[in-house]
Length: 217
Image 1 (spheres, rainbow, N blue to C red):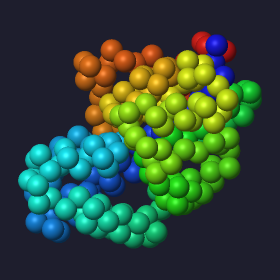
Image 2: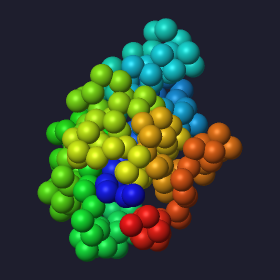
Image 3: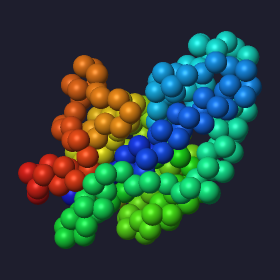
Image 4: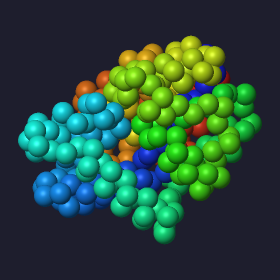
């Protein structure tokens, strides 16, 4: 039985993962750390408590995670203020279809509420969701299952009755361990062997999720 859809945000609904990659690298290089795209891919959707030791293991214990992160946010916010954010392919079609159903909708994102609202308001979809759960609202972020467990609880639906839409391996692991049905819409990389084993389905873009939903309702 399908009763709810839980959306990731960055790289799933809005095309911000490429910006996160760019500005993590720019911020780290500003402070003298030779971060590359490969390093950023390793921390996609990863909560700070996990991302920080991971990056320290690469760049050394003197890696100032919070300073680099603050610089990344500064650079990225400046860019988005000037250029806005782009919607991912198929988002409009999926949301239009969901209006014809009784499914409840939630967002489960590692991004804080202030920026989540700013991003979703900019593409006029903030108000369509029944619940929005952000990384700073829970104790353990992705890849821990907490954010999906919380989203399902707030919707009043068992996780097993929810599809979780994700673009990153860390997000898929979080959704799978929470007991949701993980559907991956790859963004910057395709699922590896380990991630593929956790998937309920994999779609090229969000419009293809409609087929998955129809099979379950």
